[in-house]
Image 1 (cartoon, rainbow, N blue to C red):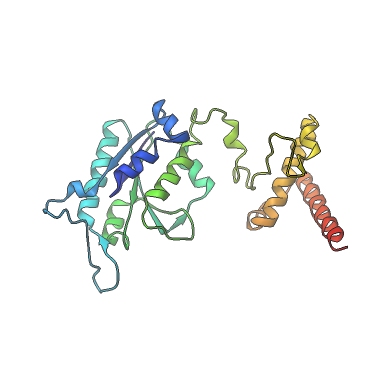
Image 2 (cartoon, one colour):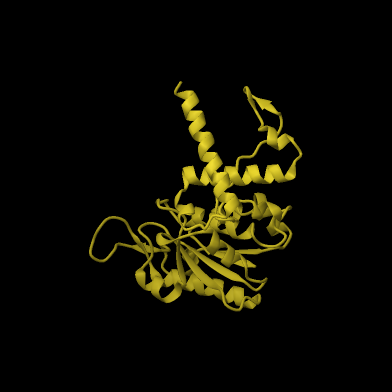
Length: 260
């Protein structure tokens, strides 16, 4: 897989991508990174990349022409490496919220998969560029940051960890939040007691089926408390219904004890 990022801060992207999971995968040749600065595609001596918006208002808008040239260069580089149909994604708070399902779809392509990530700045990009060069507009969340570089890095990390061979233990990705439509369960490690709080006994029991059921119950309960929207359209199995009912009873019991 090859991923190219069009950004005014190529050093920021190139440096950050070389740490952790993405960095190890890059060293092992499991993906390839290209960065493109649209300032390299302008001809005026000031290297102008933005201008005031028509109609007035605060801020500046990124010019269409240098961005389009950078995107075209990135696509050409991908095709030269065998990426037959590179997709261009624009990172924007106005885009479709990124979900685990969409991340999995982006990760599912073969080695010839290519992504071009357009990181905007200022008030955004000229709409005409979006209409002619962008395949998809993606939002990381319902908030605004100063540029698309951090969202692009987050998307890269999310996609790569689902690619074959990137994680040391592929099972790790299968147990993450959202993979099964639920939030992940709590996790514990040594020591067995910390600040007066002990690891749940079931995790020390060695009883694999009991541990599996406990983790599923905790995932269901955590999802109910924090992201009930994830459960609204979920068809719970009989086991899940029973586990969630028991979780609710335990919560009520704890509240009763706390209330005296």
